Amino acid sequence: MLIGNEFLIMEMEKYAQVFDSKRGKEILKKLIDKTEVVDVEEKFLRLCKPYFPEEELIDIYHAATCLQEGAILVTNDRHFDKINDEKIIEVWSISMAIRDFGL
Image (tube, rainbow, N blue to C red; front, side, top):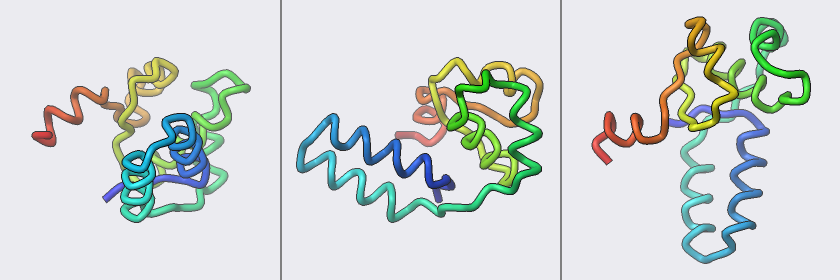
């Protein structure tokens, strides 16, 4: 199961428009259907905020979602290195996730 927040859904929709194709829309629909969208509690946002520049609000939400739900964040975005290094949340690269899930 995938866990995300409203901003993750918005980002997926944005990328589906950039790569406008029938297959892209099919993948987006499947991802959204398999994503449990959660509301992030303020306390988790406050805990994650010090690890990101203020303009990276969406990244704060992604990290807080993972912290709240005990989920692993899968991304190649280097903005998450500090919060991963401090063991606040666990962050996997996309290649690590593909390898570990046998994809």
